[in-house]
Image 1 (tube, helix red, strand yellow):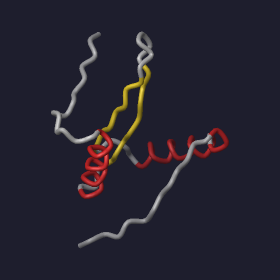
Image 2 (image 1 turned 60 degrees about the vertical axis):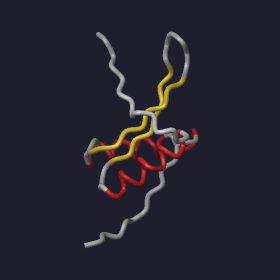
Image 3 (image 1 turned 180 degrees about the horizontal axis):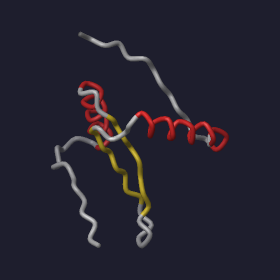
Image 4 (image 1 turned 90 degrees about the horizontal axis):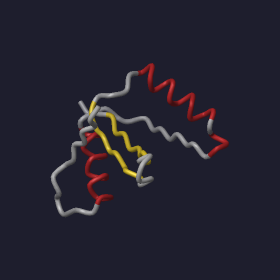
Length: 87
């Protein structure tokens, strides 16, 4: 099975600035923002993935939050904040 990777076209911005832009865009559009990484088993290089869109259901969020709480002593963190709705 071939794995395809999609990438944004290069903007010339540093990666961390692109991440901030994606975060603000996701917040403005009421989308999920996911940042994670994987380690390639062959090269052992770390690859960061940033995704925005509608991915997480309420049920999935509850499962992830509980898992984060279970792993708190191992360094897992969860931060939340109520957001005002602009009508």
